[in-house]
Length: 224
Image (cartoon, helix red, strand yellow):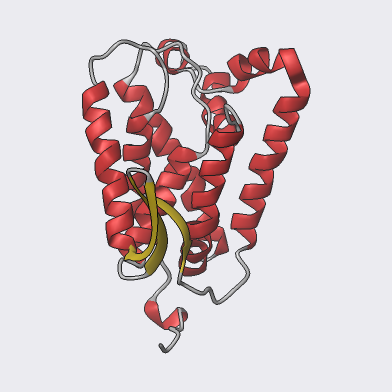
């Protein structure tokens, strides 16, 4: 299932979400401009679990942050930014801009730690905003479970567009990540999707979303 848009208006302009999307795109353009030097750049600033578990240096810890704004390709960037665009504005609206930025960075950090814990000896660079965005999805699930999401559903050779509750779209997404994450445990270190970063980010988003959300009286509801 691929979400296209949600039916959930915001009460304010989601400046932080726009800024995060812009930063990810700027980082990606910078990476592409590096050409053949991009691989060296990735190894210098991406998250490498073995570096964190063996050296625990300031640089390796800082890479947890820098890796959140790096991507492995256009499809990787596009998919992440689509999810952030659809779900980030409402989570920002509900948490408030300052708390949302704190939430995003903390959720991404917890996601990275989940990846490190499940792959402590990996020397494969890990990049992408998906751990932080998984936290956004977790928060959206608990804050707006009944909101409808226009979703593209592939059915063999046919494609169907339908409105589904966020609880179904995000619940199915999480179950897929969890299933793949369990299958990846104990497997060879071959890289690919960091499923446990997604799982850790999502769970942290659920908890942080409930903890950091603004009181109901500060969040006026639309009447349908």
